[in-house]
Length: 98
Image (cartoon, rainbow, N blue to C red; front, side, top):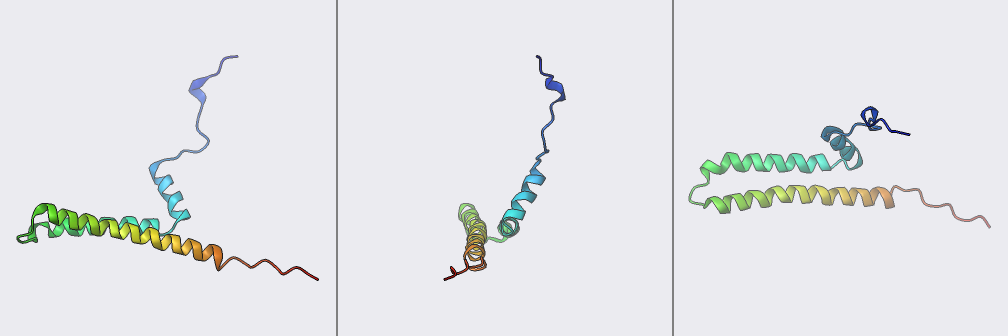
């Protein structure tokens, strides 16, 4: 028996966009962290020409730390929300009948 390798197709196509949408559905704060990162990075690039006497490397380090703080903050909020949803919104088990 020979297999026809030309006719094989994956069950579902997974592109970068679909993977991103799946992740966003699982953890809704992930896109918030990504947008925060992009905003801080863009602001850092915008302010680069007006950094004054600050060295370029110090300016880039400050921008990187601020962008990472946005992402870590979003991940932390997502973890807290997940824990809240799992432990506090979960219906409590019914007490056993006597």
